[in-house]
Image (cartoon, rainbow, N blue to C red; front, side, top):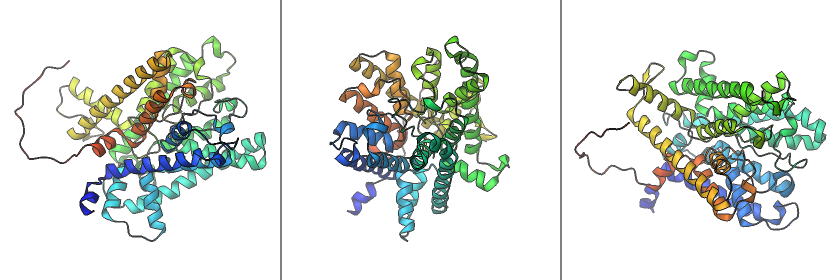
Length: 447
């Protein structure tokens, strides 16, 4: 037993934790009490919905508002909360509340789960994360409640506010607005600034990462004292919000097709469509009405995703920053890439390159498979696979009508995107070093 326990690395514990919650969620969603018509949900629908919930993706095969009952919706939002905070974070939190001692193995696993630089202070960080998560979600729900109460009623508005606040903060993109129009997301609030701004802020706060929260709490406005990672997160996040927003404002929403939008509405739509592809999955406009270049921009944003140790998925902002600075170092013939006066470790560069390769191969391979299997345009298929692997949830409408094989591809991509590519590889392969000998080195020309 002890020998088996030693083989359960942090990566394997994280992967098994996510898979276990997905399995339990699938069983609960299959029950008749989870559907509005009180019939058993198919295993395919339940598995896909549970995976999308735990992986905080938002891709759906059934209309959340009309297919799932109040119990089913409650299961979905609980799965989203678990997936957003992280299975390991929740397990450590339960152990803390139960008064159990948190061992070194649990601390090490928690460190990997939230991408913390060291083991020390992990328990304190867990408490900070829990308090922060529930406080932010409560504030988000309070801000949105008056609008929902006005539209759906005083008591029903509470559930709407809580559901969408948790979904937005966890970057899940699930909504229960489909009673008006199936799979409509929050398009009915395209001109509502309160809902737009609240959802955008929740997405951004949830997507910057728990370590960045800790820097904000510890150092306030003294940015120079922040970790290099937090500085990178802020820089890349702002760039990925304002640059795409400018593109959408000046090129997409200036087209005649969007002529009914005023200046303020164009700004709101531009920023929302720039923020939501970063693994959130809400949309306020019909994505099929967007031009080809705009859809490509959204695909790129979906693949990049949020930041390490956050509720978001994707390759992560830090991965993109490392790859860009590595390219600049090569162009300038420098030995090492640098960021904010610090040298980036070679191991980090190797991991970033491996992540990029894995994401590109899975994104393209999955898209081509689905395009051939379903007979849909390749751009549509690429949009769905980017949404799955980036754990975003945006869709051009193809996912609900896919066959079993294509659904399984999307499920695999969602798990890969949420658990993390390197975590999955480390869980599958032993990372122990066998000996210290090294092969002879020989140069190979590239480029």
